[in-house]
Structure formats: structure tokens, C-alpha cells
Length: 107
Image (tube, rainbow, N blue to C red; front, side, top):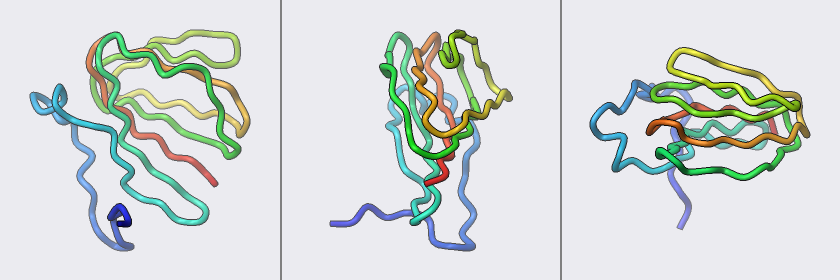
């Protein structure tokens, strides 16, 4: 069964989940041949090991705090911050607090 994604023209709620964050799961919001948008849920202490994707990405912290490692540096990201990486850049994420990130990948 195909996973439903938002159709063109539909508004998507990306506001912070607040008290619902601890029970939330990662969800792909949009997926086309050229674009993927994911709400990535990163619980406190969870590590997403080093990986890379072929296309350029943006990562926007919607709530909480994470350590984001790329290009030889580890940065703390918190709500309201966004970063960009060129395609093929290895990166990893670790939850400092329960967090949700909006990840956009150019495919």
C-alpha cells in the first residue's frame, strides 16, 4: 500500500508538535521525482549515524535541540535555525532534547 503524501496545493501543518512530540514519528510529507520533504522526529539521545544523500538538502529545526555534524563541525541547532548542505555531504544528527526537523531533499 502506498504511503499517502500531501497532494499539490494542500496546506501542510508544520507547527511545533509541543506535548505530542514525545509520541510522534518521522513522516514523509511530500515526495515527487525531484523533491522530498520529511518531518524528522529526533528523540533525546537518539543518534542518526553519518550518512549522505545525492541531492542538496536543507534542515530546519522546528522545535527542540539537536547536534548536527557536517563538514568537520558539530553545531547545536534549535528552533528557528536552518542550514543547507550540498549533495553528497556526509552528516549526522543527535537529539539533545526531543526535536523535530523539517528536511527538504532535492532528488
